[in-house]
Image (cartoon, rainbow, N blue to C red):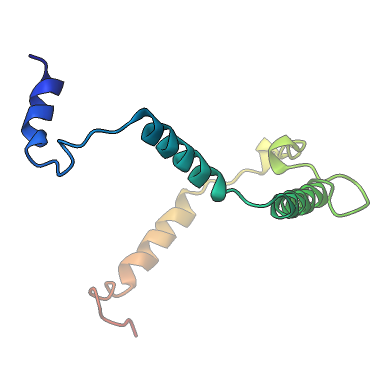
Length: 126
């Protein structure tokens, strides 16, 4: 005995139409009714063409917006995204002009020690 048969046997006791028989004509009529109900929900031809026109208008507006963004406006030089732009020129640092920064760092550390500690969480520093 298969699982399907066992399930049908369990549920058949609760089926109000278990003893009813259906003729071939009634089956065909039920199929026709189902197909008719499926097509009744379809939109009329005029509504579908308006939908296509509205979708086309939105697509055209999106296309124009994309052209305007990537073209740098509607006329003029095309804008190049930063990722594809030329790299910046290299920094020209002369070695003879370098200074020893240790003295400046020590001075900065001394100033930091002289300051009051930061405010506790939730307090306002004055």
